[in-house]
Image (cartoon, rainbow, N blue to C red; front, side):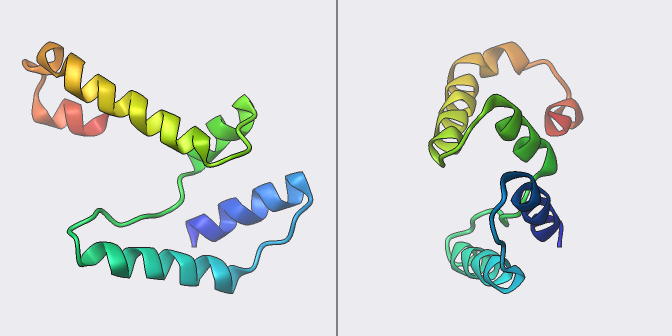
Length: 92
């Protein structure tokens, strides 16, 4: 439901059509296939969408670059987070 609301918000802002059925089928398919591989459930994020929109991201390359930044951060900066409680890391 949140993903559909986000899609409709940006569809109005950028003048394009969104089909609620297609959105739900896409999310359901992604979550069903991901369940066979132990993946986390996928869903829309209003905060991530707002940041992407405000920076002018128009392609899925934005998500790839963001994931690479997170991966590099996890690989090289994890020793700096060693003494943080797990609850604080989970909040990040």
